[in-house]
Image 1 (cartoon, rainbow, N blue to C red):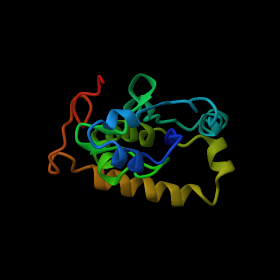
Image 2: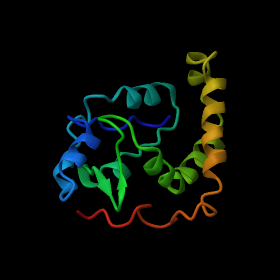
Image 3: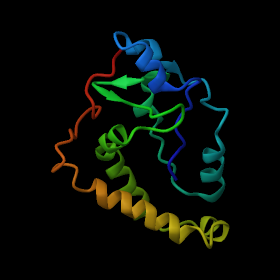
Image 4: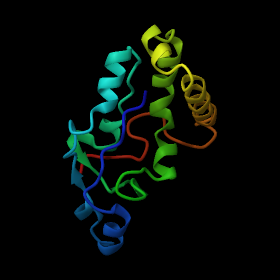
Length: 149
């Protein structure tokens, strides 16, 4: 299971458009860190591995509007396709590890009809992410460079 992304308290692209010379003005603290932990509870209850990209999206709890030259959010809650593609090198080993484990029985019982569909979607993501070197993405550090703020 992949943990949900933090939600911004505003529309991030609108904020960046309003502050083109200072996109850092649109950064926000991860205020909902524990408010929406339904995914953590579900993974814990079923024994499904949880992949948490929040540290990559919000280093040290600060969610950046722009990392490098890449807009992170396409609205208040969803990542841009460009930023998401850049996370492929980070996701690949974690997905490999999660798929290497046999599915827990509790997860299979809880999601009998949904699990095959989700598995197909996740495998599709892995297949697209698998050729990250050809796409010219970095494999070390943060995919978009310095995030030290």
